Image (cartoon, rainbow, N blue to C red; front, side, top):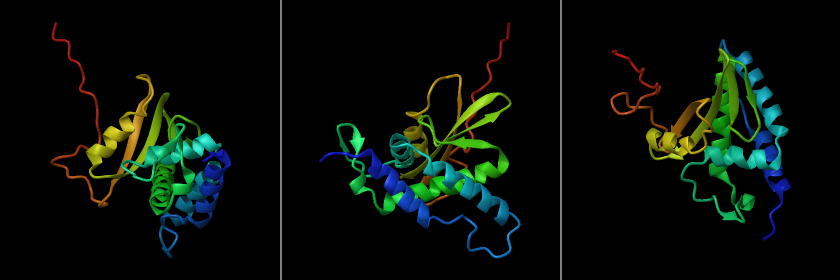
Length: 181
């Protein structure tokens, strides 16, 4: 099978045509207009993705997806179906909500998006399909580049469960080193 990068771009654009904002069905929600605007800005940005960026977008989001079959280190886009569509939808919804809080840039081959907060670069990964949030966090960790950057990892497990505060930490912060001398 000969892989064509245009397949991933076509697939992405076809799926984006059918995607709806998180609050699309809400009639009177205070954030609907702002969230819809953020959603459409992200969709517009993703439509400009290169074939490699489109592939990376789905790869980063697809923890434990058995449809990821590679030939010559490239994904077989012909096998992308409803799971990948759900992963893309989760990416769009998560990035839309984050965009309400802070400006972000999508696209590129580093992460789903990046934010600049107080001169610190944050790579944002949205991971779905894992059995647990911890598994999703570990999956995303392999894509984090460099120690000079920070990462925000948004997870959605395969059962759509919330984090268990007794087992899972929603925010991971390095422990400060205290010099007792």
